[in-house]
Length: 491
Image 1 (cartoon, rainbow, N blue to C red):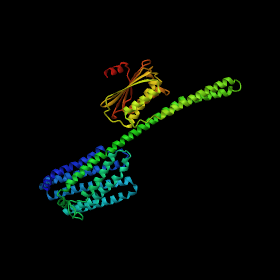
Image 2 (cartoon, rainbow, N blue to C red):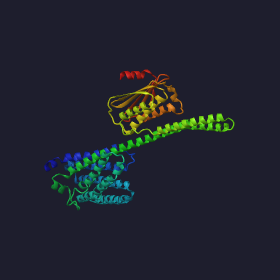
Image 3 (cartoon, helix red, strand yellow):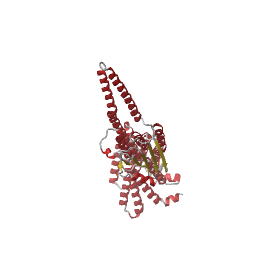
Image 4 (cartoon, rainbow, N blue to C red):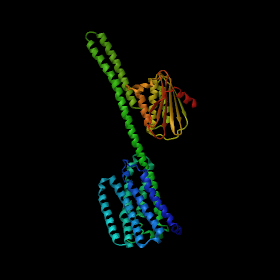
């Protein structure tokens, strides 16, 4: 086996080099720079490690291929270049560990001062010694020190820092992300040994005891083999861990959308309170005021006004209860879309004198998050309420088509319909504002609403919702009554 590794060392070096560049590019392409997570602020240092060490390994490959053609001065220059890139790659890891820990807890900020002193000390020493001599011993000493001053403490600090970041990831309640971050931290602990402690040249202690030659003699396998696997695991766990930035982005987007929906609902509620409840209470006040004026002279009319005021007040109380009920919709977050729609239809069948037909076709082909399900159900609730309350329909047909890329929901009622031109003017609450809320909700889910209506001809809606959010769209009026008939015939 030892002979196999020795005879294929060049192939292993090439693979090793490619892995470093793959690590760097994976981080650059996938890390979200706008992330609020502390981890995101430091990942560029890990990418720097990948690129710098990849260049270091490229220089080593060139030296091995062209060694016979290089003069001693050229060879020393290339080895110095290789050492510099290697040392800087270890510095990236060193500062990665410092940043991860200091970002997690500011009381360790003194590590930045310690890191700056160590970095400047090594750079000054390397420039001084390599600038005045071409002694190979200086290169070996600098190589040993770069590992002991940067790589070993850097990987240990990074491992501790990554483990501390687990708390930030746990809030998303995705076990796989937490496990991947733990795996990355453990891999860095291992790296502290096989990268930071196993030196190339046996010059300083403990390199005289633990170096790549003694490692090979003890295990029969070159250390580069283990370092390659170490790099594979780092790349794998990094690729899986950076998924947290996509999860974070999605959560932030959903939170922003929830806030926007809440704001719109509050505005609508305030408008309806002003246009409905407050005006009704004001009317009750006028009746009571008139009753007090008539109390002494015309008692019968005064009593009549009081009875009317009492009736109006009872209606106001009833309306307020309706609004409160509307503000506390049933939570459908624990059910699937199919179950939620079925439950919603059952409720409407029991509470309103409305015949509602429900048809499901196909199987759901994509996942829907809680926000998507709740918004779809609220849209359907609003449309059914409009059919019962405003359209005065006695029959509604609901058809849900699960397609490969999206979901299509069709709602047809036989009510009185309305003039679509009225949507272009400002309204005082009621059905038209409800439709605008529907268009907003569907557009927020990156879907489309197609509808057709006219006075006396019922109302027909077709809502298309993609499983994945792709682009923005809103409500569209189709000036073609035959559109829905054509669609129904096709299905």
